[in-house]
Structure formats: structure tokens, C-alpha cells
Length: 212
Length: 111
Image (cartoon, helix red, strand yellow):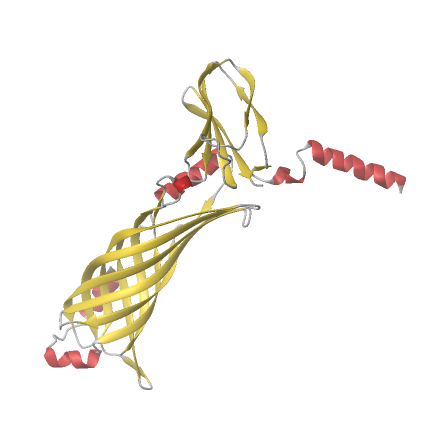
């Protein structure tokens, strides 16, 4: 949050309609994301293993990547569409028991640019997310898998570089984004009986985009 | 040579009495029906439930049965409540006495 506010103070200049021409109306980018997912039922699964005398090591963070496209509909309105993957892991003694939760998500988000300067812009946004989830529990001789999909919601604050770095003819922009996802998916397989893989939680993203 | 064979046999017997080479594993591997023992420190109402790795009840082996303190034996034929063989995977047998979980065992079921 402090980083956002410091960078926001650097955007002193107010924008006008002519200024939008240099910031590229469309951008294509690649992002790295880290999040702290809720995973409430996975925590209960870890407790069950503890009951059985097994110390199941759980990760705290989920890590992911995404490809996104940004488009400016107006001076103050920006939209984003992206496809991303995320992964969350748990394990006991490296290979004896492994838990692997994976998600593929498609997101669309609309942002309102609260502050748009020559160098940086600050925006807030929200939008729907659709996620496909797969849960794998692997032991030495067995592998159990379950899958499901569902809708969720993402809200965030975003800091975008507006004056690009030039690498030859390529315009490069950097992005920072932080927010919260509501992203809880029930597994469909019969054995799961409504087991939920919950990727909901705060996230932080850093990305680089090229101007189109 | 004969002495070496005797020593090796003794070692194998010792390992076998400890539960085999798999004794260091956190779970017991099973491929068919098996029995297991459990001990009760006091008299009470006992439930023995099999759960899968989604923490869902797969089979209720004992439900609300009054048992005395001491050693008891139960068994599971790797079938669910509908009589179907359960899929391969990790399963947990939970022993409950008077609504308190007193023991949980982990099994790796495979063909």
C-alpha cells in the first residue's frame, strides 16, 4: 500500500485527451502472481493427516502466471482480459504423499482510472473470474484426482506505467496490481461430494506489457 | 558362507516382525480385505468410520455400538456403503469413543 501511495505521488500532471496517444490504447502482457489462498478444506485435510500422525507440510502461497490484454475504452476506462494458471502444493516427506491444487482462470476486469499522469496511472477495478480446478493427491502407488469449475469475483488496485521504455521499436510497460479474489470451486467427482478448493484470498501481481 | 546366510535370515526375520520394509511408511498398504485392532481405555459408544482423501465418509464399519474397555478387532473389505470397491487412493479409519476421536489410521488402497 505504501508503495502504491509513493508512486501515486509521482503522477503530478493531469491528463487531457491528447495525452492518451502516447500510452498505447492496447497492450499485451505477461504477469507473475502470488496469492495467499484460503484453502480451508485443504487445511482440514492436513488436520486429518495430523490425526493419523503425519505432519503434512502445507504451502502458504499459491504462485501463478498469466497472459493479459489491456484496452483503453476512454481516458478513464480501461478493460483487461486474461488467462492464467495458479498452483498450490502440500507434501509429506517429498514424494511419499503429494497434494497439488491447480487452477486455470479466465478473467475480465474493468478499471476506472482515478489518476492518470504522463508517467503513471492508478486505477481500481472489478470483474468476474471463471476457474477450472484440479486436485491431485498422490502416494507411492496411487493417484486420486478431482476437478470442478465455477465463477468468482476479483477486485484490485493497479499501477500502470504510461510512458513506455523503448527497446528498439517495442514499447514496454510495467504493471503492479494488488487485490482480492473470491474464487471457491466445488469439485464435481462423486467421491468429492462437494469438496471445495478455495483459491480466495489476497493477491499481488507484477507484469510487463508491450504496446500494440 | 553358511554363517552369512544364517545372519541374513535372522535379519530378514527381524525386519519382518517389525512390519516389513514398509514399516517406515506413514500408511499401511492394502490390496484386499484386512483386519485391524484397536484398544479402548474405557467402556462407551463406539463408531468406526472410513474416510477418503476428500474427508467424506465412505463406509461406516461400526455405528453407535456399546463396547467395553480392552482390545477389539474390526475389518474392512475395501467396499463402500453401496458395496462397490473403493477407488485406489488414501483412506483413513477413524475410531470414535463417546464422540471423541481416539485414533486415526491411514491406508493406501491399491490393486
